Image (tube, rainbow, N blue to C red; front, side):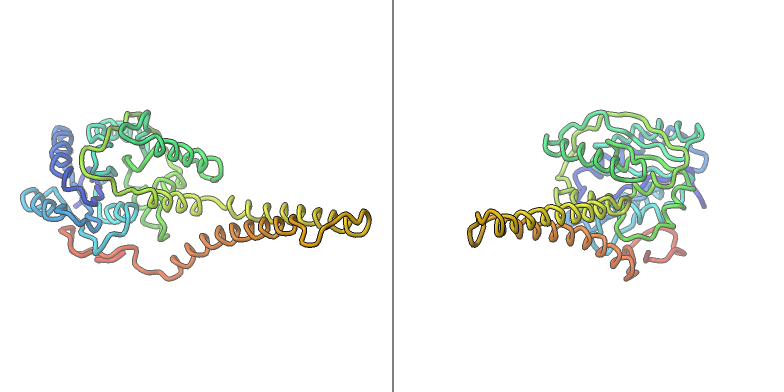
Length: 318
C-alpha cells in the first residue's frame, strides 16, 4: 500500500540525535493529517554505536517507523539510495539525521511540491557550525562543478529535498555505483524549485563526513557529470609538448649556433620533471574514470541488507 509521504533518513553513528529527530518529525508530520499517512524510513549504514538498538526500539512501538539495516557501511549516498529504493510514498523527503536540516521545513517543501513541481530542494543561506575551511571548500566545489558540468546543479544545496514519485522511479533506473544523487536529480530535469533556509549547527555527535569522504564525493560528482578533466589533460599534453619543442629548438640553437651551453644543463632536468608531472596527473585523471567504469562493469550489488521491516516481497540486494 502506498503512503502519502515517505521520509528517508540515512544513519551513521547518530545515537545522540535519533530520539530528538524522531520527536521533531512526529510534531511536524502528524498535524498534516496526510490522507495516506506517512512512513519514516531509517537506513542504518553500518553504525558502530547504539544507533541500531535505538532504531529497533522505535520500530517496535511505532508501525510508521521502517528500518533498513545495511550489512556494513556503504556510504551516505548508497544509504540514501537504499531508502529511496524501498520508500513507498507518493512523495519522498530526503533528510540527514544530524538536525542541521530542520524537519520543520518539510511542510513548506510539500506545499511547493503540490504547486506542480517534481523537485523542491532546500538552498542554504548560511552554514552555522562549519569551519571556515569547510565553508570555503564547499563554496569552491559547488561553483567549480557548476562551471565544468553540462548539467545545471544548484549551488549551496545538499540532499535535503522533496521529490515526486516519478523522480524516485527515475533514480531507480540509474545503476551507477558511484552515486551523486543531487546531480542525478538535476540531470533528470522536470520542474524544480527551491526554498532558502539557514543551516543549523550539528545537534550532537560527530560528523561522518570527513574531508576524505568529501573529496571522494566531489570526485564522484565531477567524473559522473563532466569530461572536462579529460579535456584538460589532453590540452595540457599539447601545451607541454609545444613548450618542450620550443625548449628543444633553443637547446639546438645554443649548441650549434651560439655554442653557449653547459653539459647537464639544468633546464633539461626541469623539462623532465615538468613533463613527468603532467603525465602523472593525466594518468591519474584517466585512472579515476577507468576505476568508475570498472566498478560498474563488475555489476556487484550496490548494497546488501542485513535486516529490515520493509515489505518482504522486495529482494534484499540492489
